[in-house]
Image 1 (spheres, rainbow over the protein chains, first blue to last red):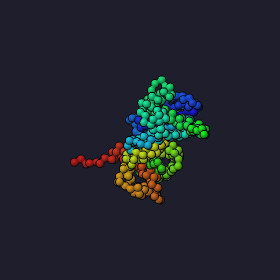
Image 2 (image 1 turned 120 degrees about the horizontal axis):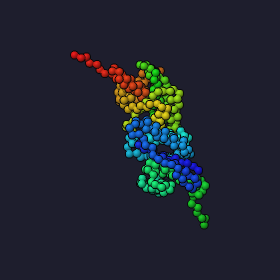
Image 3 (image 1 turned 60 degrees about the vertical axis):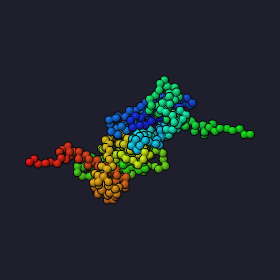
Image 4 (image 1 turned 120 degrees about the vertical axis):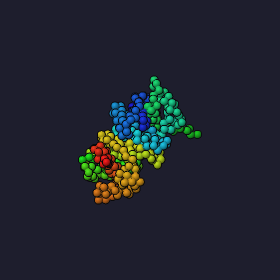
Length: 173
Length: 173
């Protein structure tokens, strides 16, 4: 049993989701959206991200954390805001001694939907299906669960590769 | 006596400096540069910023923190990196219950050198002079001390304004 925390940080909302990867079974644990106070200055907003994620980690005790890696932001200003939120989220993980893995958005979509060009709605739909949820999770929570799923798939592939199952075996003629 | 912690965050090096503002006297307390491990991934690097600043805060017990505000970054990629470092630094302050104030780089230079277009070397020189240091502090430490000085000047102006000393008094004819 391994609990994975996925985080989708943003300067207005930060999504989180926890999945239990028990062998080949995937079990939904929790997910949600941290809403940052719109009228506050940056420091108390970052504190909300840090405090909320710290509380979630202390409550559910995940063993690993996964977060989306960002390469292309629209503008320097939005990149700075996103970076600040990411910084606060990553620090929440590392101060609770979680190893934090980063995944490109394209890889997350590829891993969950099968194509790196998937829409937000497709990601939400596939997260619902893969985790057998009764309803569609909100956008940020779905993105957080998707990055956790991507981490689980990636880890599993690495284990399979290491044990030889990932190699196609040819027949000697 | 008020101890002010100034921080100049960066993705390679983060400068810090503490000044004691005792009435009209300014007293240098400490300063330095936190070097981030170049070969590590982002999460442990952000942990170094967070842990180092937390240790500095716990050791010296400053009452307030000041940090440079960034408006224009060179590129989205450098803005993201800077944002992550800023996020980790600000979270270190707010989790130790310090009020964190942000100041534009231009305002910091204006406040320390007298012109918003001052060079790095001018800032270093004026920080040395204002704090009566025996030598020139390193660039990032000087920037951190400069933002602490800017915060002290700004607070003092606000207090003067509130007590009426900041207004020019005309004589009634």
